[in-house]
View (cartoon, rainbow, N blue to C red):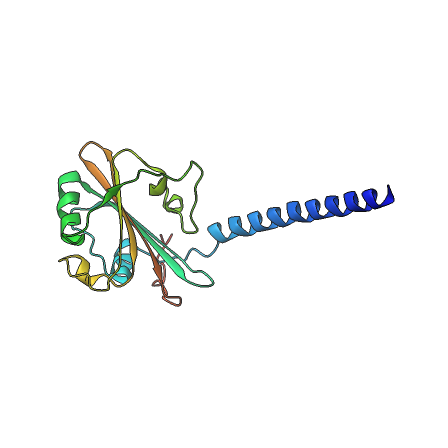
Length: 187
């Protein structure tokens, strides 16, 4: 009987440490998501850093840059009339590749380490209707818009209202790139 009590006490201690450990990891992940957004990451600067041109007709341009311990992440979003977005994307995505529907969306509440929520936008990975996605890397990319790409990107196009498409771009970037000094609110 005493052995059973010891075993139960050990099991309870392990469960308590696991619970506390998961809370600590959860708190750390939450801090990581909210931490380290740099001021000065304008859409123009982020576009130049990624090597991805923003079309002149784009509106609602938004950008953010998050420094991390192992890598940094840039996020960029802008809106175009759907026909112009399709034309832009056709010059970016190689002819032998295509953007695919988001058939396996992330669950509600999904928040990557560099969320578009920081820019006041929904996470494109959670969207289903009217969204297409592709991953592109600069190695060997020769499409007219893609040949200037400097980093790998996850690219999403979401026709959120008929005739309006928001383009979302997320890219990991080598650490140490620094946005220009902020004038005002920054992002």
